[in-house]
Length: 316
Image 1: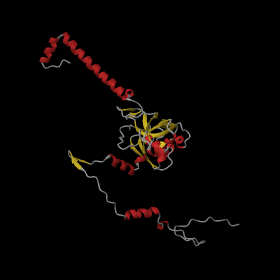
Image 2 (image 1 turned 180 degrees about the horizontal axis):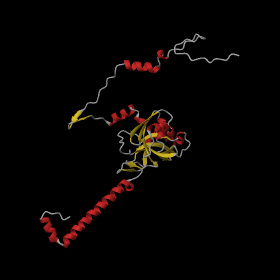
Image 3 (image 1 turned 180 degrees about the vertical axis):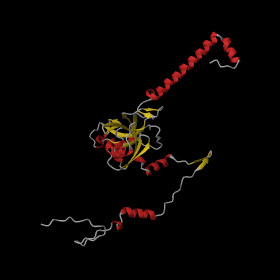
Image 4 (image 1 turned 135 degrees about the horizontal axis):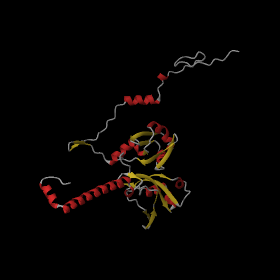
């Protein structure tokens, strides 16, 4: 019985002897990507008006408005970006790129890069992934049997890698809110009094908890955040206005230290400030002790001190 011989792979462009089919040459196939690149290379560069600069005190100076910077942020995909701050025993960048998006729960595409020492910048393509990243401010993950901590902050225009931002994503609860105000336009308008609303919790969306609505909002924890908002209901026919006050409850609102520029504690709990206070106290004690020694020497024999001073010598 003759053995079946497996067909050998054909070279590109070679004709099959058992068939009239010709394997196409991939070099001659023009894909959408290649046609797009061809159009881009042929098309002339778009002319743009550059920002003018002026010389101020001998230094070239360019001015950008906050609105312009926000537009630049959208252009660079930073409107859905978060900062990941790693613990001191951080893993190498390639390991983090392979594992961290899965650990966080990012389902779509994302761009992860090193922003500063132990700080990563993640740009999310999907808004749901952006909200998912901000689900918890402090997280842990296991790698090679060791636990690593990472903290998450929303990226904002003006972010300084040397300081932790005072912006944080927090849940706010609106207890006993009138059920018709669960409508997205009404609910997000109320939440916008506090900060930038980014998500509504599932129970509020499916209307399974009519007693309370919850919205995730990016707030500046250094601001004086309102504990209530006044809602006015206008009767267009009679012109009557009814006032109602809605309570706002903040879930796990973090504190901020203006001394070390870190979230999680206040100045009276700052280790750096306490260490500085102890050091200042020691310097103060040494100064007082030296002053006491001078007074004792003056009281003991002022004639010796005056003679030494006249001779231009330093007593202490």
